[in-house]
Image 1: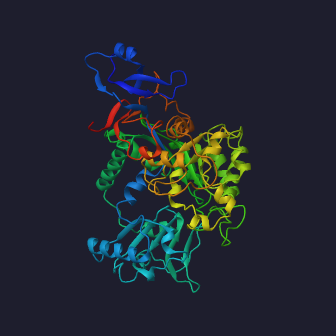
Image 2: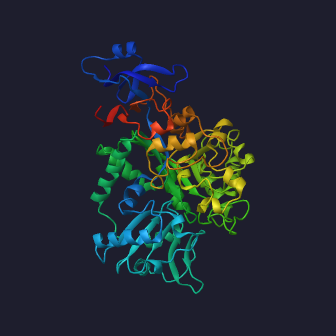
Image 3: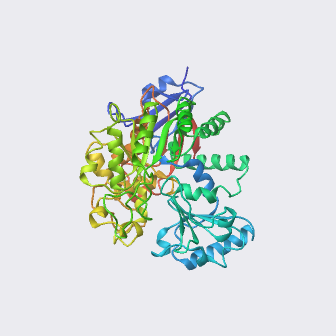
Length: 530
């Protein structure tokens, strides 16, 4: 059979050591069947769709190594508060949003940055007069805290502190009055669960829109870091209707209170698969975030916080990991603090045969040399988001830096050191925490700062342009035990056509680099006018 699709004249950067570059590619039935103009011509006939890639560069498709697709599609429907710099601006934005949604409706927002509070605790009384009589719920940018007004607290029946099965908190004043700040998911869910749910039709439209928007910036796949057995049903339905335009590797979320029956259901779901999706991953969250003092560090931070794991009993976490690993699942663990990272490494090392390249740690925001040196020999993947450095200031005046020692700040996001030591480094966005555009991630990985940054963050090495590309392509496939992210005959036909080479162009040029074509499983999912 002839090829379905061919691209001629492009500079094809294959990431295949045996043939790093070519000038054409062809695919048939979702698989690359030819590389190089001569072989492509032999594989093509009059039925083949042939596209001109002259003066453009073609790379393997980009994979977001850590994302929350369905959460992001729904959370970002509220008012966008990213970049709001002071409480006056916040009040003005919320007043305008309240006028738009009406006095009694739920007012939802996202992207609130901790720096906005200038070190003072959040209290919903500071927003009185602009939040309206109706309920309000605002998401912190990192999804580790929410901020509710009095009406939202009443709707959820929150009138004081509560005990959860983990270290989540309903923050209260000394006399027990809830301030409206909800830290970590067990606490946040108390209010989230009473927010009116959108219709299934609305949800589906939002999910499809998010997938298409991500295709437009070169994303062909993602590691989905939250979900349940029901999420597998959602993926199957999207694929059946032709609306799943990315490959998805699902990691089902495990809470500290998740029981044995739920774990059994996850193991059963791990055997389910579609053409474009798999559900054989599990996601744990061992600690919180440094900014709010909920990470797990070796030593207390400057305010005496960041000393405890999110799981009250870390050994229970370790047992749960062993259960799911024995059930065939790949395990990803959120671990931001150095103590949390150490515990995860110890947990994986204690498994029969160790990690064997199957398991990974997410974020790893600060780590000393001894921890960094363990990743490669213990075959643990480092899944990281350098794009998060956009919220850190070189003068260390931001909430993250203010809690840490100078050495810990120096050792933030050590992607280059991990890669240089031989560790498998996977890059992602953590969307909706940061934007999913991989060009932003490439930029941050190469310069160790966000586009608005004045200087690199920390003192450790960045990734080279080639390493950053591998982090979004070949490494992301290796991390889930799949053959892909390299363009060679017989491998998946996922690729992106760029107006210029994302490796050779400058980091500044990356930010606006046009994406001309995105192909997933041999099918065009995005095509721009040239």
